[in-house]
Image 1: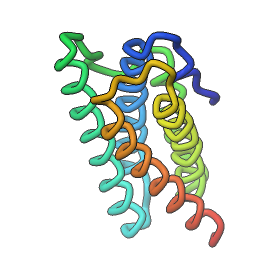
Image 2: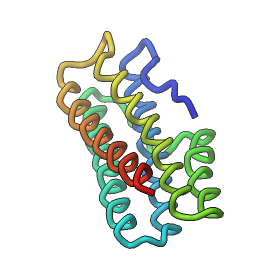
Image 3: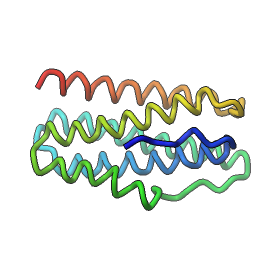
Length: 150
């Protein structure tokens, strides 16, 4: 799936879309945790899900400081695609689940990169976005390294 998160001209709207994408990612990781068999992979996926939950909290707080109500869940349309890839991956094993999670991480990396370079980024958002992007890079790199070794 190709994401459009971060292409919004208004930074507030882009940030709200990022929160929704983070909810989508957390739900996909939860689906993966419930389906993956390899315990080492499961522990790593749990830690990645916790990162996404932390991102939701941090981004929500950032929106609140600007008196903006943050989304309280995933985008209804995208969540089925994001989570569905993981559920379908269960039909063919751990590798397919990890591949689905990697696909989702490509989207979150793209979104964070766009927000980091957004023309109208809020000064107080720069650090939060940069930290989130580092986490997303780490998630994607780990998934790629595992998939390349299988």
